[in-house]
Length: 452
Image (cartoon, helix red, strand yellow):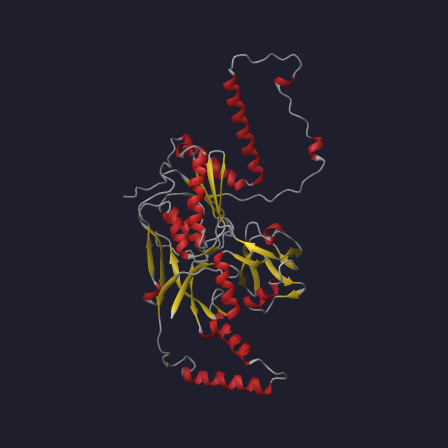
């Protein structure tokens, strides 16, 4: 039976990678309580029959068994669960990159649904949902005591319908209600653009399109810049990226490494252990790289950040990542359902497990909260007084028209950088790092290891 491996934080976005097969008998063994597995199974059957015969209402046998299976799996860890036929089908659709919903990646923590990250450009993102939010109620119904799959059922609904989510957020004294209109979620895996002389690669998820999108986007930006010599470096933005396909995380890491280990997975079973190595070729051609992460960067994102950090190929900037260092295997079951089971931990090239610890940035940079706009502020801001504003000021006739044009272009770039600092302080900080490295000669002095 084929197994499928994924490196995602768990919830609305999951990913699959084909791996080895397994099959084997269940062995009878003695439990701590002194009874055999077969005796415990007899107990389960006895309870099942008593529920069927004695419960106050008729029960759905299939639903009851699925609930028992899911309870067994969810008791292990937050990422193991049973996927019904519908859930397994949804998972396959999500991996292709388009589905209906809110655009939230969630997990479960202490009985509550916790937001790992909102997905860029989705209704949840537009509504202001943030990584670290706890969802306590959906349309007034409490989520306490529900499994993650049951909570997700409440969050799902027809495209165009409204859902009111009650959120508990750090630094907010009271719960807040957030209104979100469900929509078709189309995931754009990578968005590429140029800020100044830096190419920004915003990776939102790791699906089948991630590496092809990244490779194509980088090439387009370099061509638009007039060649690699006109680029200071690359910002790989992995903020609020919940993870996805393990092989895509390996491809993205390999894109900037010439050799060495990228990630290893180690499970109780040798068959669940593997090691992935980089191959020759660097899409960035040695340009410096800054990786941006935050608390919404999970799993596959952490694989990429950890690999580039350990190889000293990139400077990691931002805040500590989510800390999901486990691998789930999805096993198809009879009836078109599936089982998602945690089978291994993954380790960065230096051999560190980041489970529950996360990736620590080389430079910690917090993203300031947006200040509320003051409509009177613009009216009160007077134009700055300069020499050129003074009546009768002398003209500067020592510069040519080309020199004046260059000065004006430099000033425009500086003003754009200042505006970016207002809009996205972490990204502006990353670009400043690239400018500084370029000023030192265009190389990441002391940060890029020799890769033979």
